[in-house]
Length: 72
Image (cartoon, rainbow, N blue to C red):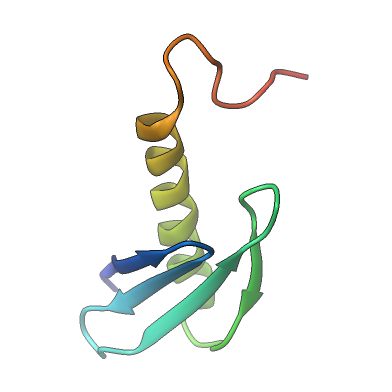
């Protein structure tokens, strides 16, 4: 399956399955984790797509010199 982030609003990411055109909505929690999912089919791959998008977005929008996530 092929998934793609089609929209990113303040706390919501929309991921579409390019083969079936099903759209998945993810709500971002305080720790940039996926907190809620509306649909169940192909959920794992859609979720990975949303998380990968968040990681990339966070890297691109982090202030210079500030680590993206603190190391434990």
